[in-house]
Length: 265
Image (cartoon, rainbow, N blue to C red; front, side, top):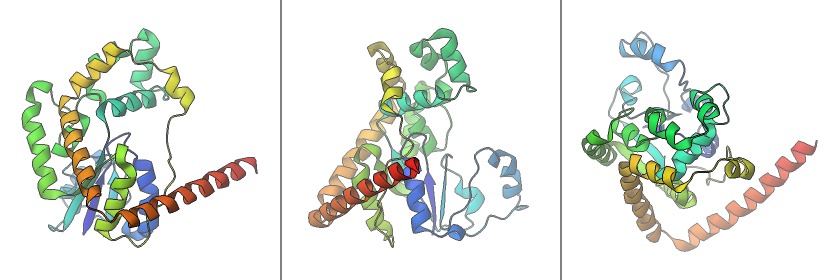
């Protein structure tokens, strides 16, 4: 089966990427390049380029990528959702760590997060999660009901699993059990903003309300599948999961110590 991990920006994809490298050999992981793929689309579409055989393809792409890579019906998608307000705030912070980005330059000029988000919704600040799962890039809120229903239909028919960042351990364990991975999914949190970066950028209540309004359907989608993760977790073997969490804690402490020693040396 071809497994497509639809990595929505700022949804713990870096941690999952490490796990994929542990669970799948290099030949089973299809390389992905967001920058070059648009140039290659026609070549894939016209069969000038043939993608290699693979078991998993992870990247920042929207639903529909299977049309270029899977010649059979033997494929499924996997994705992780995140609380939409937290995701947009994290996305903004990422842009503000990139001096060459348009959002960074706008912030330097105006220092007004509300204005930047409102005037640049297409940069991933409005229902991005729902749009990507539906196979769209950006859709105006007035047309989002149809897109939301399309996202639900895609999930029902072609998604292997939908987890949530806020229940990452539970989601990860459910993926492990469903796919029957060879190794238990032990990971360390990677690519997180530092406390200083988080405290430096303030979102006032007016800006938070704007983010909520722009992500009405993302919030609706997120709540639905968060409830599903909770329901699935309730039906799991509790002792087995607790044993996994205990061992995960040991692993994360050891890995943190390793990194500290590595930095000193």
